Image (cartoon, rainbow, N blue to C red; front, side):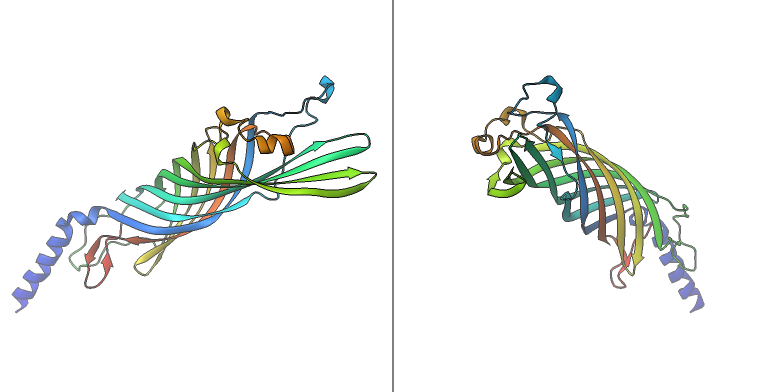
Amino acid sequence: MLSTAFCQAQSVWDKLNKNPFKNSQFYVGLRAGANYNAINVINRYSLIKPTNSLDEGLYDKQYQEAENVGVLYGITFMYQFEQRLVLGFNASVNQIRFQYTQEQPGSNRSVNFIHNHNLNYLDVPIFFRYMFRKVNSRFWDKSNKKPTVPAIVPFAQIGINFSVLLNADKEYSKFTTQNGVESREFDRNEDIKSIMSPTMVGAFIGGGARFRVGTFYLTAEANFRQGLSNANNQKARYVNENLQNQAYDVMDDFSFQSVEAIIGVIFPLKYLSKKEFMPVEI
């Protein structure tokens, strides 16, 4: 009987050490968070030009910061092919909001326009993640005790982001001030998808941590994103006549800079034991 038990234990130990599924792991999960966006102006454009060169910047758009918080949510896929290295990609809906004002000053009467933008992109980031942890032996010992993996593992990551524009809306308002009295003349809404670039490319860098909770993981991360392409469609700058006739508005050339904070939950897809729901943990 002892001989039989020893042979069975030896067989289990051999299978675990020879199991190729021990050496990697696939994950699928959900992610959601918030972002804060800033505008990096590349070239400025305006329908109204000053008569005096000293007033060259008088009618420039003034980009605001208070309305620039958006949300993002989606799914994530990752492949951990080494204890410290992970390759992954996400598919997320990313909301980008920003605002600018444009003033037309006058001696007796001044006009001010406020433009609020709400854009939604399908984001597909591809990234490499480095896990800050001690490398353990991949082999189980003969007591069938699995290798120790830290419950909390910090990480750093870097990647490139591809974005496809889903929809884009603008709300703009006109205010006039005369003799110290301000009045609101109108509010308008406009679909501006046709004057925005249909695709964008960017890069990002960030970090966070992975937390083990039973047989799945929670992740928390923060990233800085830099747009590498123009968010505006240069060929369609003057297409929207409503904006030009009602608000004397044409888009600048610009890219986005974003800071995002994201919470996620990921589930392993490979298991050493389906009966015991024991995932491959590396």
